[in-house]
Length: 253
Ligand code: UDP
Image (cartoon, rainbow, N blue to C red; front, side, top):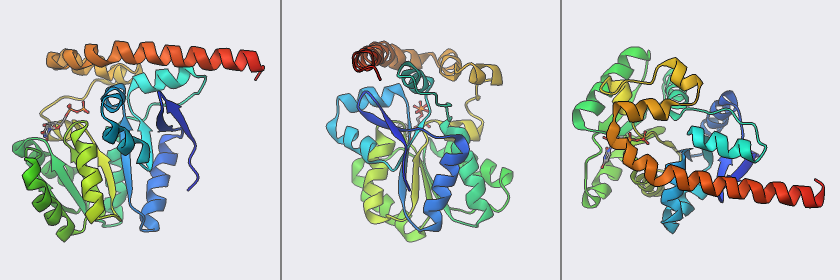
């Protein structure tokens, strides 16, 4: 499928609506084509700037959803209007679509009691959801081969990895080599929310693009992550946007 992407600091971001993103995934499922979906945010971009392998994984993903409000802002500075697509809402809709078609789903990540509760809640809330495999996200690199084999045995059509960045994208990259016709999404802290152990930000925060602020208030340990990445990210995107605007002015485009 033709993609419409834009670069943010050198990383692909798909420009599309929520519905287009869903339809894009369903088209791949219908054609039995696997894909890695990244729900990108400024933190991931800063991680990729320091890790070339991770940068390659991000740029080779078949779909990159503009998840963070920092990404929306970066695109806006470049003159591109793009709605923010929260990864958790997008993934939830994908789960519903997979349930409607009785396609098996695997969940990998979060603490044992969290993934168990998330699986049970999803099963209750989404009729006909077929969870063929789940396990917690606390394993060593030595266990990965076994876990990937276990997943492969169950042949899920959708694999959700909630291991945080960059671990989830790296795990997906490895898993795809063994099971390449599944849809993979790195979903960050979504299992914690589905399990009810972390509260989703109220609508007003989400509407204003301030979900990150609410999450930081609730989990103050996140401040360290934000102040380490966000200021630098913003400075870089402002410089990038200025360069583009000067270029456009000089070329009269
Ligand atoms: N996690 C995991 N294994 C690890 C480290 C983290 O399964 O080795 C889980 C953690 O329990 C949490 C998720 O990964 O459920 C990361 O959530 P975070 O809030 O950091 O992700 P974000 O939504 O900010 O991307």
